[in-house]
Structure formats: C-alpha cells, structure tokens
Amino acid sequence: MLTALSERWKTRLHKIIFLEHQPESGEVFLKQRRVFTLPSKAGWMFLLMLLILFISATNYSLSLGFALTFVLGSVALVNVFFCFRNLAYLHLDTGPAQAVFAGEETHFTIFLINRRQYQRYAIWVGFNEKNAPEKALDIAPESRASIHLSYPTRSRGWQAIPRVRLQTWFPLGLLRAWSTWLPDARALVYPEPEEHAPPLPTSGAPSHELEGQGGNEDFSGVRAYQPGDVLKHLAWKQIARVDPALGGQLVTKQFTGGAGNDILLDFSALPRTMNLELKLSRMTRWVLEADQAGLQYGFKLGQEDYAPAQGPAHRDACLRALALYEL
Image (tube, rainbow, N blue to C red; front, side):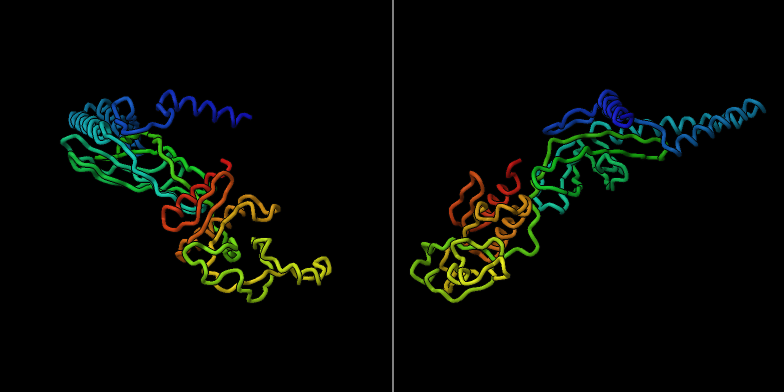
C-alpha cells in the first residue's frame, strides 16, 4: 500500500514539476520551461573542488588561489549556458510506426528539428525507463535528424509509444540538461503466428476463376483429422465404423484439384474449446501462408466478412481485424 501511495505521489510530482501530462500530438517545441538542468556527478565533484579551493585561498590569503577559483567558476557558468542551449528550442515530431507481430519489437521514428543557426552536439535520446538503451546524435543548423527507437511487444492490439527522454551533458559533462516527451503515437501489433498450424482449410466451393477445372468432387482418399479441418470434410462413413472413444481415429477426406477451391478462413469454424488467442494465432498463420502462396482466400471474423481476394491490402486488412478483435 505504501509503495502504491509513493508511486502515486511520484507521478503527481512529475506532472507538476516536469510537465509530464497527456500524450501530445503534432510537432512539439521544447521551450525554456520544458528543459531542466542539474549538476552531474562530475559537476558535484567540481563544485566541491571549487569550495575547497576558495576556503584554502581564504585561509592562506592566496591571490593565485582566488584567481584559479574564479576562472574555474566562470568556466562552470559558461558551461551552464551552452548545455542548456544545446537542448532548448528543439522541435520534436514522430513518423509512422510499422505494424509488427506480438513478440517482435516495435520501431518508432523520432524527428529532432533544429531551426536555429547553431549546431547541437551529443543529444542522447531514449525511452524514459530505467536502464533503457539510448542513442546519441548531432544536429546541424537549420536541419533535422531522425532516430529509430525500438520497444518490445507482448500482446496484440495498439502499442502506445512510451515516454521519450532527451538529455545532454555537452560541452564539459558538468551539467545534465534533460526533457521528456510523450508523443501521441502508436503501432499496431498483430497476433503472434502459430508455429505448427494445420493445413489451410478450403470452403468446398469451386472458385469462379478456376470453375470446372476440378474441385471437391475429385475424391482422392482420407487422412488423419487435424484441428481446424472443416467439419463437412470429415469422412463420416469411415468414422461410423470405429468408435473414437475406444481409440478410433477421426479422418478427413482429401480432394485433388484443390487449386480450384477458394480458401475460406472462418473463425467460427475453429473448435470452440480452443483458447481465443490461439485461434487468432492460427488465423494469422493461415493468412500469411495463403498470402505467401499467392492464393485467393476469404476471411470471416465476427462482423468482418471479406470476399476471396489476394494481395498486400487484403492481407493487411485481415491482420488488422485479428489484431483488434474484441479489444
């Protein structure tokens, strides 16, 4: 309970102090209020050294000691200005994120736009998480630079981009300037394809393009039943001769001229006892296999009912429906 309360207060303080509010759409400008600065570890040691030098020069009346202290202090003040200016007044934007499958990494493109007349050096960009990897880049005057950040996925659906952190220690490493930004960007995550899915099911109806060139009427034999087989293709006469409860095996009819049949990927035809995510994974694998083979296939999933077609647009529409099913 104490941990949850502390996290709640931490989140609230971050919203008040560091302006970590809701996702921001469009181009974002890092104005002065959004850039924060604090001494780094090296900076704290540098301040301690200046304090020791000042005390020593005071105790022993060392003119050169005072001079060295003031020179080093001036260097620290100049460093503050250049460190802050290196990050402030940047414009930030995001590019489209490519859809991936669950278990893969999403890839977000971040654009850093420098509309000032000076160059920016060693800006580190990464997600605002502990031990998150970061990438450094320089930005020339009046130009833009892009950087690609990846984030692991665990489940299907929309994957929102985590909060992005930008920071720099330029030029001397004595000061850390940073800012955070939560873009209004997301990537679509498809279900993970099943590794060992059964063969593609067929609708049992000849396709219009290949009608009359063979089809389900060309019976060629039977094979062992595999989960996902269409029920009307079961060899009921052979099954009636054995009792599955006593070890008899279910068998499915096989037909030659299968190329003349439309493939129908029907979610409702899958066994009801199957897990929902496993069903979606199997449908995903079938969509990919049919697309890679260049076959026409129909698709039925809830309210989505697509006529037999092929091509990237049809594949992406089917995968999108699977990714967002019941979400």
